[in-house]
Picture: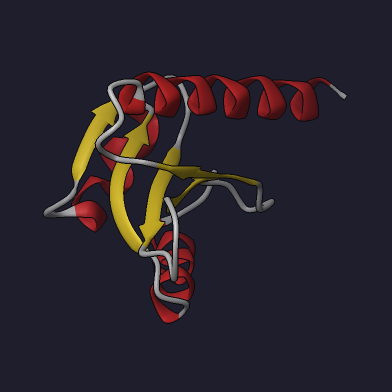
Length: 108
């Protein structure tokens, strides 16, 4: 399992490249170990450990990336309009894609 130091390295790297931590999904196990790492950010109980980052675009929709919080890096990127009525549904769909991909990797 990933630890707080490794998560802080991920957060530092994303921040270095202009990404802002927006939301976090945590399993109960990880939340009990690193929950305070995400102070000030929306943290939701989940069956997967992941962090949502965004960064402003030069033009067009905002880039949103969901990063699986594990030692082996894996992320999915979407360009989204935050005012779109389907914005939240799109985030949930990307989270499902991440779950499926991680499950596939773990079963391989």
